[in-house]
Image (cartoon, rainbow, N blue to C red; front, side, top):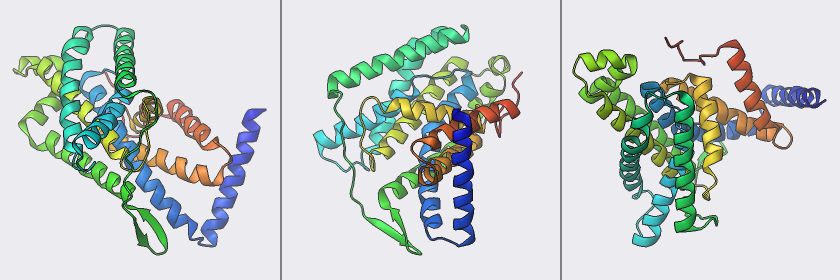
Length: 310
């Protein structure tokens, strides 16, 4: 009964969307801009998750709370020291990198060769610990340091500067990560470990150290995503669950371990979120995201850019 209703909503939405395309409705430009802005932030939120899986085959269920930790790091620095939230971004990146290394050394390294369910329990436990710590230090109440930066104008469409800055941060972070992995000796060692961990050992790469650095970088990217989000959105200790779920959908859509896949997956989810939110009733857009997720798992389990792993 529910599926036919959803299909009717989707057919009606597609029909309305096609009508707006034919009439060149100005709202399409506005929606496209919002979809691009949101998709970029989603991609950044998923980047650290897919990197850790790509190198270590570990699905980090603490990723959502690492994003939250980035949010509260910026909040703490901004409210106690009084500096601009944008200037606090590097502090969040460094703090989350250090936190990621500590998590890797103390919790992930001992179970790196354990069955996947052990990794699930450990990383989920880390998530619960971080959630409790945030609530103890900051209370469960919502917080906000949203910056009123104004808007750009583009052919009559509005571009909120806060979201535009977040998108710019996401693009720079993704480009910097690509250059780091492709053009540096450490990045080459990380890629070699991702390709063949045993082979990396034989050629003298310190694989445990690479694992710690990888978790640190993945955590730093999560912290950067959280720091970018607080520029334009309120937050609370529980918001990490929403970003964790979307990050999982994005990395599976794009292909587990694929950085380009994370970017494209983020744009797809952002587009469905924005266009679906406008044309579909209620929260049907969320259902569409998961229908697409299930359909892709059925048709191409490795994701859009993923390769079957040996």
